[in-house]
Length: 217
Image (cartoon, rainbow, N blue to C red; front, side, top):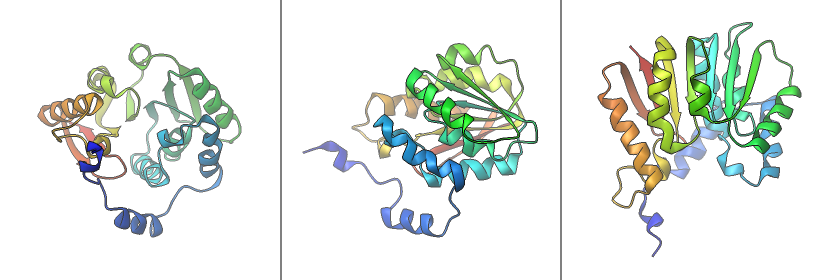
């Protein structure tokens, strides 16, 4: 028997459908990126509309001057995050895959903005060290095995009171399960590390594939 059938649902499909029905979801050009992403054959990697709206609303609450995103993919999450940027703010976004980087760049040129998108190609761990900014909001959605290492690189750059949102943190319901896989185990270690870190406060939100919401003290 496929052991994945034993993993619990993070959210009941019925409840999720209800939440989708009665929530504001991204509109306009941002929404068109969902269909544009289908050409990659990897649409499952896209932040869904519900998570996209969550990112937008978090950004609107924080009103960041500087955002950093790890894992651009096709730029959907980037544009959702950017909705709350201060006027003349900027968002750095890092993507390792050149095809995805180019597709995101195309999407960024097709939408008019009053903020700066700094689209970077390469390994996030290397590029983080090159960003000399105080960051207000960070979204981690790249190599799951590197979350812990990247967190330690990012935290000194995050302002006091700044926010890190780490995605896929419940890993399809596998974290904490006896049959957790290698990526899930890396995320489990990350969650344990954050919970024990006296430099931050955090709460794990069981939305989408799980989000660890972290505030630097």
